[in-house]
Image 1 (cartoon, each protein chain N blue to C red):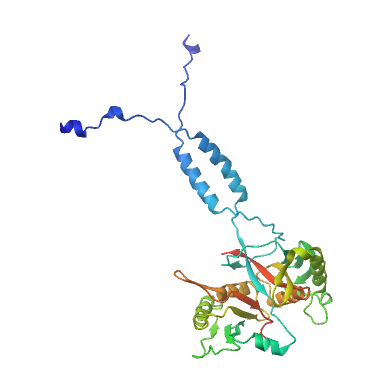
Image 2 (image 1 turned 180 degrees about the vertical axis):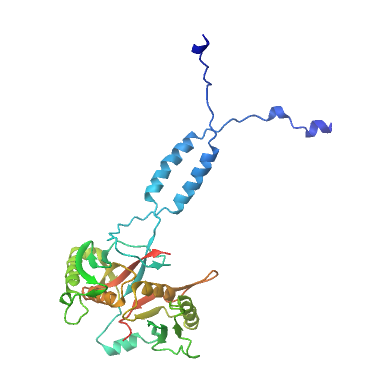
Length: 165
Length: 170
Protein backbone atom coordinates (compact mmCIF):
# COMPACT_ATOMS: atom_id res chain seq x y z
CA UNK A 1 0.00 0.00 0.00
CA UNK A 2 2.68 2.37 0.95
CA UNK A 3 4.34 1.95 -2.44
CA UNK A 4 1.49 3.64 -4.24
CA UNK A 5 1.12 6.43 -1.80
CA UNK A 6 1.99 9.73 -3.38
CA UNK A 7 3.25 12.78 -1.64
CA UNK A 8 1.23 15.84 -2.25
CA UNK A 9 3.12 18.50 -4.18
CA UNK A 10 3.44 21.85 -2.53
CA UNK A 11 1.22 24.55 -4.07
CA UNK A 12 4.09 26.80 -5.20
CA UNK A 13 7.87 26.62 -5.27
CA UNK A 14 9.78 29.79 -4.57
CA UNK A 15 13.16 29.92 -6.32
CA UNK A 16 15.77 32.26 -5.01
CA UNK A 17 16.77 34.06 -8.19
CA UNK A 18 18.47 37.07 -6.59
CA UNK A 19 21.95 35.95 -7.61
CA UNK A 20 20.75 35.31 -11.16
CA UNK A 21 19.27 38.80 -11.25
CA UNK A 22 22.59 40.24 -10.05
CA UNK A 23 24.40 38.48 -12.85
CA UNK A 24 21.91 39.61 -15.46
CA UNK A 25 22.07 43.21 -14.29
CA UNK A 26 25.86 43.26 -14.54
CA UNK A 27 25.73 41.63 -17.97
CA UNK A 28 23.11 44.10 -19.13
CA UNK A 29 25.16 47.11 -18.06
CA UNK A 30 28.28 45.67 -19.72
CA UNK A 31 26.46 45.03 -22.98
CA UNK A 32 24.84 48.45 -22.96
CA UNK A 33 28.27 50.05 -22.58
CA UNK A 34 29.55 48.16 -25.61
CA UNK A 35 26.42 48.78 -27.63
CA UNK A 36 27.00 50.55 -30.89
CA UNK A 37 23.98 52.26 -32.34
CA UNK A 38 25.63 53.06 -35.64
CA UNK A 39 25.98 50.14 -37.95
CA UNK A 40 28.62 50.24 -40.59
CA UNK A 41 29.18 47.78 -43.36
CA UNK A 42 32.91 47.25 -43.53
CA UNK A 43 34.01 45.17 -46.47
CA UNK A 44 37.14 43.59 -45.12
CA UNK A 45 39.54 41.45 -47.06
CA UNK A 46 40.76 39.76 -43.89
CA UNK A 47 44.39 40.35 -44.76
CA UNK A 48 44.72 43.80 -43.27
CA UNK A 49 46.28 44.43 -39.87
CA UNK A 50 44.84 47.75 -38.80
CA UNK A 51 46.89 50.39 -37.02
CA UNK A 52 45.70 51.65 -33.64
CA UNK A 53 44.55 55.18 -33.00
CA UNK A 54 43.06 57.31 -30.23
CA UNK A 55 40.77 59.11 -32.68
CA UNK A 56 37.11 59.55 -31.72
CA UNK A 57 35.74 60.13 -35.22
CA UNK A 58 33.03 57.80 -36.46
CA UNK A 59 33.15 56.23 -39.88
CA UNK A 60 30.82 57.31 -42.67
CA UNK A 61 29.65 55.33 -45.63
CA UNK A 62 31.58 56.40 -48.73
CA UNK A 63 33.78 54.71 -51.32
CA UNK A 64 35.90 52.09 -49.61
CA UNK A 65 39.41 51.31 -50.74
CA UNK A 66 41.36 48.51 -49.16
CA UNK A 67 45.09 47.96 -49.49
CA UNK A 68 46.09 44.67 -47.95
CA UNK A 69 49.40 42.84 -47.98
CA UNK A 70 48.98 41.60 -51.54
CA UNK A 71 46.41 43.65 -53.42
CA UNK A 72 44.43 46.86 -53.84
CA UNK A 73 40.63 46.60 -53.83
CA UNK A 74 37.90 49.19 -54.33
CA UNK A 75 34.48 48.36 -52.86
CA UNK A 76 35.55 44.73 -52.62
CA UNK A 77 36.59 44.52 -56.28
CA UNK A 78 40.15 43.52 -57.04
CA UNK A 79 42.04 46.28 -58.84
CA UNK A 80 45.78 45.57 -58.74
CA UNK A 81 48.27 43.49 -56.83
CA UNK A 82 51.58 44.48 -55.31
CA UNK A 83 54.57 42.80 -53.72
CA UNK A 84 55.71 44.30 -50.40
CA UNK A 85 54.30 47.63 -51.50
CA UNK A 86 55.92 47.61 -54.94
CA UNK A 87 53.49 47.77 -57.83
CA UNK A 88 54.32 46.28 -61.23
CA UNK A 89 55.54 48.92 -63.63
CA UNK A 90 52.95 47.91 -66.21
CA UNK A 91 50.25 49.23 -63.87
CA UNK A 92 51.90 52.64 -63.52
CA UNK A 93 51.89 55.60 -65.87
CA UNK A 94 55.00 57.51 -66.95
CA UNK A 95 55.18 59.60 -63.74
CA UNK A 96 55.51 56.42 -61.67
CA UNK A 97 52.83 57.59 -59.21
CA UNK A 98 49.52 56.95 -60.92
CA UNK A 99 48.16 53.41 -60.70
CA UNK A 100 46.14 53.15 -63.91
CA UNK A 101 43.71 50.29 -62.99
CA UNK A 102 42.97 52.04 -59.67
CA UNK A 103 42.37 55.33 -61.44
CA UNK A 104 39.94 53.72 -63.89
CA UNK A 105 38.03 52.00 -61.09
CA UNK A 106 37.78 55.21 -59.05
CA UNK A 107 36.49 57.13 -62.05
CA UNK A 108 33.86 54.41 -62.51
CA UNK A 109 32.90 54.66 -58.82
CA UNK A 110 32.76 58.44 -59.05
CA UNK A 111 30.30 58.26 -61.93
CA UNK A 112 28.18 55.70 -60.12
CA UNK A 113 27.97 57.51 -56.78
CA UNK A 114 28.42 61.05 -58.01
CA UNK A 115 25.70 62.64 -55.96
CA UNK A 116 26.33 60.72 -52.77
CA UNK A 117 30.00 61.09 -52.00
CA UNK A 118 30.65 64.61 -53.16
CA UNK A 119 31.12 67.09 -50.37
CA UNK A 120 31.31 70.85 -50.68
CA UNK A 121 34.80 72.19 -50.25
CA UNK A 122 34.61 75.96 -50.31
CA UNK A 123 38.12 76.62 -51.56
CA UNK A 124 38.55 73.87 -54.10
CA UNK A 125 35.05 73.08 -55.27
CA UNK A 126 33.49 69.65 -54.80
CA UNK A 127 35.79 66.85 -53.78
CA UNK A 128 35.18 63.16 -53.23
CA UNK A 129 35.64 61.35 -49.97
CA UNK A 130 37.26 57.97 -49.67
CA UNK A 131 37.78 55.53 -46.85
CA UNK A 132 41.13 53.80 -46.91
CA UNK A 133 41.84 50.65 -44.99
CA UNK A 134 45.49 49.83 -45.19
CA UNK A 135 47.76 47.32 -43.56
CA UNK A 136 49.94 49.02 -40.97
CA UNK A 137 53.13 47.43 -42.23
CA UNK A 138 52.88 48.83 -45.77
CA UNK A 139 55.37 51.54 -46.74
CA UNK A 140 54.66 55.18 -47.44
CA UNK A 141 55.60 55.06 -51.13
CA UNK A 142 52.59 52.82 -51.79
CA UNK A 143 50.35 55.17 -49.78
CA UNK A 144 51.68 58.07 -51.82
CA UNK A 145 50.90 56.31 -55.10
CA UNK A 146 47.40 55.44 -53.86
CA UNK A 147 46.72 58.98 -52.60
CA UNK A 148 48.11 60.55 -55.76
CA UNK A 149 45.90 58.31 -57.93
CA UNK A 150 42.84 59.10 -55.81
CA UNK A 151 43.68 62.80 -56.04
CA UNK A 152 43.82 62.53 -59.83
CA UNK A 153 40.34 61.00 -59.76
CA UNK A 154 39.20 63.98 -57.60
CA UNK A 155 39.03 62.07 -54.35
CA UNK A 156 40.85 64.50 -52.07
CA UNK A 157 39.44 63.78 -48.62
CA UNK A 158 40.75 60.64 -47.00
CA UNK A 159 39.64 58.78 -43.95
CA UNK A 160 42.07 56.19 -42.68
CA UNK A 161 40.57 53.35 -40.73
CA UNK A 162 42.19 52.41 -37.46
CA UNK A 163 41.22 50.31 -34.48
CA UNK A 164 40.28 52.26 -31.37
CA UNK A 165 43.12 52.05 -28.88
CA UNK B 1 6.74 52.42 30.25
CA UNK B 2 10.12 52.39 28.50
CA UNK B 3 9.66 48.85 27.57
CA UNK B 4 6.52 49.61 25.76
CA UNK B 5 8.08 52.59 23.89
CA UNK B 6 11.13 50.84 22.53
CA UNK B 7 9.82 47.43 22.15
CA UNK B 8 9.54 46.39 18.60
CA UNK B 9 6.34 44.72 18.00
CA UNK B 10 7.25 41.71 15.99
CA UNK B 11 3.70 41.04 15.11
CA UNK B 12 3.53 44.23 13.04
CA UNK B 13 6.40 43.27 10.70
CA UNK B 14 4.67 41.64 7.82
CA UNK B 15 6.34 39.07 5.74
CA UNK B 16 6.31 40.55 2.27
CA UNK B 17 7.18 37.21 0.76
CA UNK B 18 9.16 36.83 -2.46
CA UNK B 19 8.92 39.53 -5.09
CA UNK B 20 7.54 38.41 -8.38
CA UNK B 21 10.57 38.92 -10.59
CA UNK B 22 9.33 36.88 -13.51
CA UNK B 23 8.22 39.82 -15.73
CA UNK B 24 11.56 41.51 -15.20
CA UNK B 25 13.38 38.29 -15.95
CA UNK B 26 11.41 37.98 -19.16
CA UNK B 27 12.45 41.45 -20.18
CA UNK B 28 16.12 40.95 -19.38
CA UNK B 29 16.26 37.60 -21.12
CA UNK B 30 14.89 39.18 -24.29
CA UNK B 31 17.15 42.26 -24.11
CA UNK B 32 20.39 40.34 -23.61
CA UNK B 33 20.32 38.42 -26.93
CA UNK B 34 19.47 41.65 -28.72
CA UNK B 35 22.47 43.41 -27.20
CA UNK B 36 24.71 40.42 -27.74
CA UNK B 37 23.94 40.51 -31.45
CA UNK B 38 24.67 44.19 -31.83
CA UNK B 39 27.62 44.46 -29.48
CA UNK B 40 30.91 45.54 -31.03
CA UNK B 41 34.08 44.52 -29.31
CA UNK B 42 36.39 46.09 -31.87
CA UNK B 43 35.59 49.70 -32.61
CA UNK B 44 36.80 51.20 -35.85
CA UNK B 45 37.55 54.90 -36.02
CA UNK B 46 38.49 57.25 -38.81
CA UNK B 47 41.44 59.61 -39.15
CA UNK B 48 40.79 62.50 -41.46
CA UNK B 49 43.37 63.85 -43.83
CA UNK B 50 43.47 65.46 -47.21
CA UNK B 51 45.84 65.98 -50.08
CA UNK B 52 47.90 69.18 -50.04
CA UNK B 53 46.28 72.03 -51.93
CA UNK B 54 48.08 73.14 -55.01
CA UNK B 55 47.74 76.19 -57.16
CA UNK B 56 49.38 77.41 -60.34
CA UNK B 57 49.08 81.00 -59.20
CA UNK B 58 52.14 81.61 -57.04
CA UNK B 59 50.99 85.00 -55.75
CA UNK B 60 47.71 83.65 -54.44
CA UNK B 61 49.53 80.87 -52.59
CA UNK B 62 51.77 83.40 -50.86
CA UNK B 63 48.77 85.49 -49.88
CA UNK B 64 46.87 82.51 -48.65
CA UNK B 65 49.80 81.45 -46.48
CA UNK B 66 50.05 84.84 -44.80
CA UNK B 67 49.70 84.36 -41.08
CA UNK B 68 50.17 80.63 -41.42
CA UNK B 69 52.96 79.06 -39.45
CA UNK B 70 53.54 76.37 -42.08
CA UNK B 71 54.30 73.74 -39.50
CA UNK B 72 55.62 70.40 -40.72
CA UNK B 73 56.76 67.19 -39.09
CA UNK B 74 59.17 65.07 -41.10
CA UNK B 75 59.41 61.39 -40.24
CA UNK B 76 62.97 60.34 -40.99
CA UNK B 77 64.67 57.06 -40.25
CA UNK B 78 66.41 58.69 -37.25
CA UNK B 79 63.36 60.37 -35.73
CA UNK B 80 61.12 63.42 -36.15
CA UNK B 81 62.15 66.83 -37.44
CA UNK B 82 59.75 69.70 -36.74
CA UNK B 83 59.97 72.70 -39.03
CA UNK B 84 58.02 75.89 -39.71
CA UNK B 85 58.19 77.70 -43.05
CA UNK B 86 56.95 81.09 -41.95
CA UNK B 87 57.63 81.18 -38.26
CA UNK B 88 60.55 81.06 -35.91
CA UNK B 89 60.07 78.08 -33.66
CA UNK B 90 63.71 77.10 -33.34
CA UNK B 91 64.74 79.62 -30.70
CA UNK B 92 66.57 77.16 -28.51
CA UNK B 93 67.94 75.07 -31.34
CA UNK B 94 67.97 71.32 -31.42
CA UNK B 95 64.67 70.91 -29.63
CA UNK B 96 62.84 70.37 -32.87
CA UNK B 97 64.70 67.18 -33.59
CA UNK B 98 63.20 64.25 -31.72
CA UNK B 99 65.39 61.21 -32.08
CA UNK B 100 64.23 57.63 -31.87
CA UNK B 101 64.39 56.03 -28.44
CA UNK B 102 65.78 52.48 -28.56
CA UNK B 103 64.75 52.06 -32.16
CA UNK B 104 61.19 53.33 -31.74
CA UNK B 105 59.71 56.71 -32.59
CA UNK B 106 59.18 58.91 -29.54
CA UNK B 107 55.55 60.00 -30.04
CA UNK B 108 55.19 61.39 -26.50
CA UNK B 109 58.10 63.81 -26.87
CA UNK B 110 56.76 64.88 -30.28
CA UNK B 111 53.39 65.59 -28.72
CA UNK B 112 54.99 67.52 -25.85
CA UNK B 113 57.11 69.65 -28.18
CA UNK B 114 54.06 70.38 -30.35
CA UNK B 115 52.17 71.41 -27.21
CA UNK B 116 54.87 73.99 -26.48
CA UNK B 117 54.62 75.29 -30.06
CA UNK B 118 50.83 75.33 -29.81
CA UNK B 119 51.00 77.49 -26.66
CA UNK B 120 53.00 80.09 -28.59
CA UNK B 121 50.78 79.89 -31.69
CA UNK B 122 47.24 79.44 -30.43
CA UNK B 123 45.59 80.33 -33.74
CA UNK B 124 47.38 77.64 -35.79
CA UNK B 125 45.53 74.43 -36.61
CA UNK B 126 47.37 72.81 -39.51
CA UNK B 127 50.37 70.56 -39.77
CA UNK B 128 51.95 68.80 -42.73
CA UNK B 129 53.36 65.34 -42.15
CA UNK B 130 56.26 64.40 -44.39
CA UNK B 131 57.00 60.70 -44.16
CA UNK B 132 60.08 59.19 -45.76
CA UNK B 133 59.86 56.43 -48.37
CA UNK B 134 60.18 53.54 -45.96
CA UNK B 135 57.90 54.85 -43.19
CA UNK B 136 55.12 52.34 -42.70
CA UNK B 137 51.44 53.16 -42.46
CA UNK B 138 51.17 52.37 -38.75
CA UNK B 139 53.88 54.92 -37.94
CA UNK B 140 52.12 57.56 -40.04
CA UNK B 141 48.85 56.95 -38.16
CA UNK B 142 50.60 57.16 -34.77
CA UNK B 143 52.29 60.40 -35.84
CA UNK B 144 48.92 61.81 -36.88
CA UNK B 145 47.60 60.93 -33.42
CA UNK B 146 50.55 62.66 -31.75
CA UNK B 147 50.11 65.84 -33.82
CA UNK B 148 46.34 65.99 -33.40
CA UNK B 149 46.14 66.10 -29.65
CA UNK B 150 48.25 65.98 -26.54
CA UNK B 151 46.99 63.58 -23.95
CA UNK B 152 48.29 62.47 -20.60
CA UNK B 153 46.61 61.36 -17.41
CA UNK B 154 45.62 64.91 -16.44
CA UNK B 155 45.26 67.09 -19.53
CA UNK B 156 43.94 66.69 -23.03
CA UNK B 157 44.77 69.50 -25.42
CA UNK B 158 43.88 69.84 -29.07
CA UNK B 159 47.06 70.59 -31.02
CA UNK B 160 46.88 70.63 -34.82
CA UNK B 161 43.81 68.72 -36.00
CA UNK B 162 44.12 69.61 -39.70
CA UNK B 163 46.62 67.00 -40.77
CA UNK B 164 47.87 66.95 -44.34
CA UNK B 165 50.16 64.25 -45.65
CA UNK B 166 52.84 65.75 -47.85
CA UNK B 167 54.99 64.33 -50.61
CA UNK B 168 57.68 63.01 -48.35
CA UNK B 169 61.29 63.66 -47.45
CA UNK B 170 63.48 63.69 -50.54
